[in-house]
Image (cartoon, rainbow, N blue to C red; front, side, top):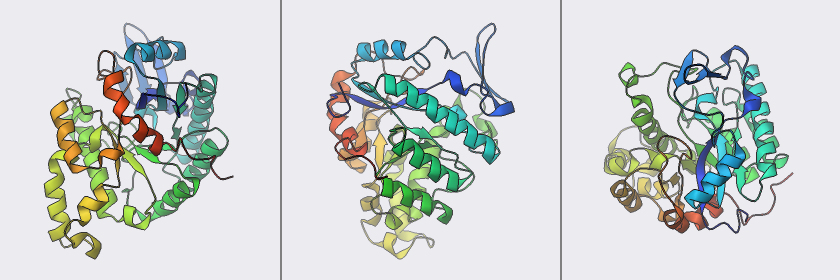
Length: 334
């Protein structure tokens, strides 16, 4: 099996790598196994999630679980707890290099079943470009994978050279949130219980990412840039009408957004994984975005992975995933 031949493709599957433990100095990450599993990043601790011995860290365990779930091919991505977008640039650079080398080693051993997205340090745009180029050209990765919050909005002009580099490489950008407060601003204190920073906070960040990319002119300045946003773009399907109305009426909207249908046309450019947990939510999303730009995702081995065999559910999206991941394209330019 290969990406080109796979009948089911999962683009939303995080990996935890033993080689990265301690790679960010005092920030960790650190994996503990006292009374219960503990994963520390800076002062943030995640309790009760078993990484060691699970599909997150053991490729053979992952492949057996993929077989049981009916998944032919999976693209592994950085753990959102370890983006390290806010730590000192040099530490972030070191961590990302170690991470990408280790992840490339994993997927090289299972190239018929696994691919990879690269971790990049977004606090240093120049190095983010260099590491993306290295990851794609030398390590064979499929593109960069970033958080939705890294100290500057997605429409910041400083990011234009990053986006231009992606279009030159002909690779997509994947945007997936991290819980706020891991190594950056603390975020809304009301989201600090019941996993609301993940359940609700992620959706808010994803919706903001969609709006910022469109309102901020990113898609207009980079007409061939492909961006995929996790979890169906958060609340985009539900808030579609309000966002489109604002594009036509609010004073900050540029002339290109004020025309009827302009927001809707730009929204058609974006990609989304369909990990939204409810068929009614997916039905609504399908009516608002481009169905040809929906791809299958699972958050594999996470608490919210869909149960059972997913082959029938995933198969209709395989061709879309091959398009997003350039499975039919030639090698990236040197």
